[in-house]
Length: 125
Image 1 (spheres, rainbow, N blue to C red):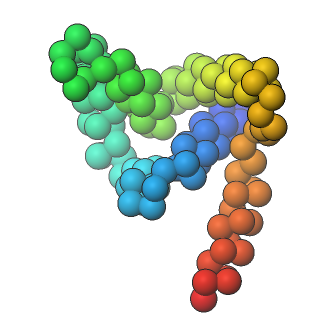
Image 2 (cartoon, helix red, strand yellow):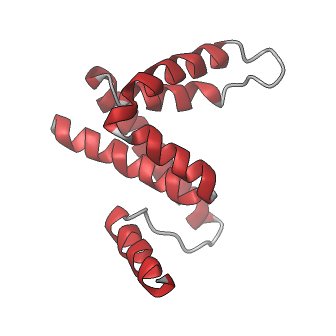
């Protein structure tokens, strides 16, 4: 895989995450993913990693650590590859678990998701 492939994988996972959220948080995540949001994304990622380190306190938890790492990885090229690999591993394990339960699942296809959202906006108009 090249550097471009890792960035594309990272974007695919973030797009999947965004597609699972309700509209308002999805809009915020979409805004965070834009290149112009770099100066908000990086400090937010560092704050989330710091909060994950303080997971023994109430409200803060380990959930903050991977979320912060994903946000930081969008701006730090050295973190793209390990983050994309980790997210691929998590997706693979998740799909194996779902198949073991008998749930029919398939990996997220960003192109298919875009086609679905385009067709829903056309029907709404």
